Amino acid sequence: MARGKMLIVADYCRADFVNYFTGIESEFDLYFFYYNYKEEIKKDIQLKFGHIEFYHSYTNAFEILKKINPIKVLFFDIETYNQIALLAACKEKNIKTYHVEHGFRDYDIAFSTEQRNEYTRIDAGVKQKRIPFLKKIKNRLFYSSTQSRSKYKNELLQFRKFRSVNSIFNSATYLGKLDLYPDEFISFSPQLFNYHKRAMGLTARTKCHYTGFMSSDAYCKPIEFVKNKNIIFIDTFNHITQLWGITNEFVTSYYQQIDAICKKYKYDLYVKKHPADNTNAIENSKVKIISQAEFEKDQSKFCIIAGDYSTLYLELLGLPYTLGISFNTFPDKSSDPLKFLLKYNVTCRVDELKDLDALLATGDKFYDNYESLRKNKENYVSDLLYKLDGNAKERFFSILKDE
Image 1 (tube, one colour):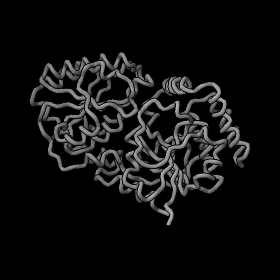
Image 2 (tube, helix red, strand yellow):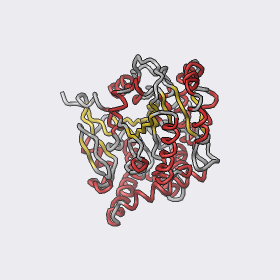
Image 3 (spheres, helix red, strand yellow):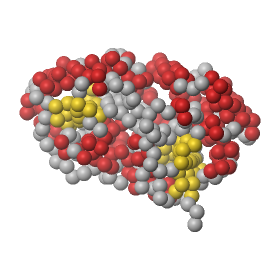
Image 4 (cartoon, helix red, strand yellow):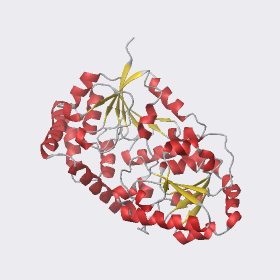
């Protein structure tokens, strides 16, 4: 019996995205689409299974669907013209589509309107520099060719006009108005799905499956809180997009200062880089860097966690054996993306680096924060994380297998 085929629109250079499908590759033929051309890939491909296809190999989205004949199409992003064209073609061919949550997001909290536009400008600029002119033209023809063949040609034309003068954030809302969004959503929790409801103008009837955070499964172990001197900082990649005024130079200096404070009180600082960070900003600070595999192997060494608006950090905050330090120390002082954490009271907050100095200066009293904050975690988990039981990936697989 032939295995069913799934088309996955996700960055396969990110190990955390690829890990979503590790363990189910024996039950489906997996096809990964993300990049238009091979030249766009500037990082190591993380796939050890499945097939890779590039958009430039096809004239339009219908050709992709005809060749692969997928039973389901999973979108981690629906932002680029090609992704929109593929979504429209799927709807026309009655191929079931899903939007898969892949990070902790609430842009209404985290970004101002100006920052949204700046994010779009920088991100688009970085991507466009990678693509030769003739290939840019061919890429645009993919959308036009799909549009001309689609019963959604008017919607695709309206989207192109709107997107050309608007950010990805505003465009998400416009997709909802055009009724161009996936059949179903797979989200971490009801609270986080509320973002998509607002952003895309979804109705209460929109079907959503909740899984919890799959990346947290590896950390749901019977570990006891240990009073040691190790601090792990879960980094983001905001210095790439320059959100909140963060630059490569800022990150290098930032970690040098944090490391100096930690050493002052005999703490060892480790930094885990974001999977999408291909810069040397953290390396240049000379701090200790720990890989994902090393962190998972030595979890019990790292009960003290630090971070800001990182998905993994916000997951780890919910675990019963962690003591969190949340950093709201961005160059742009008008931003406070971690404000939503205040009502949960599950973390020590640092607004300036002198606050970290004062926190660690309390000696053993610093560890007393663990008990006082731990009792608040149940509400935090139920509100934002759904479940922390180590079974999120199992719930995800059951959705994929469902006919």
